[in-house]
Image 1 (cartoon, rainbow, N blue to C red):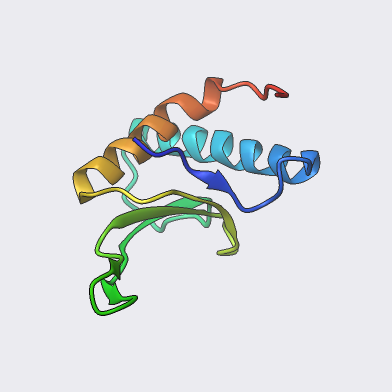
Image 2 (image 1 turned 120 degrees about the horizontal axis):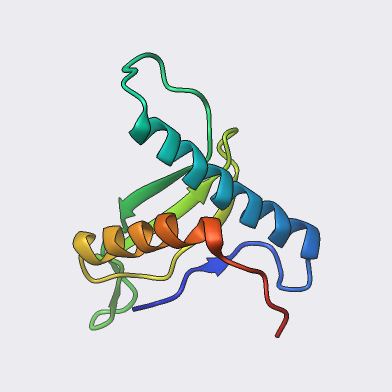
Length: 111
């Protein structure tokens, strides 16, 4: 399973910290919403977009696309992180679910 890559460089600690905070905030908000019986208006918060990349012809015999990807966005819609490609929507959704479940307890490790 491909691992998503961050838009910010790995040397950008403030940006990486913001992404971690966004993921943790997303998970906390998701859990709170799951525990709530309210069906009212949805507050602006970080979210994942899942989309299919259209198939394009690179040459007469090579093609690209026709795969699934996720994008993690801030409440304002700015891209915080993007994934690699997945062969199916189900695999993409599984990766998003793993991020949602593990982000709140994830730690930042310097390599």
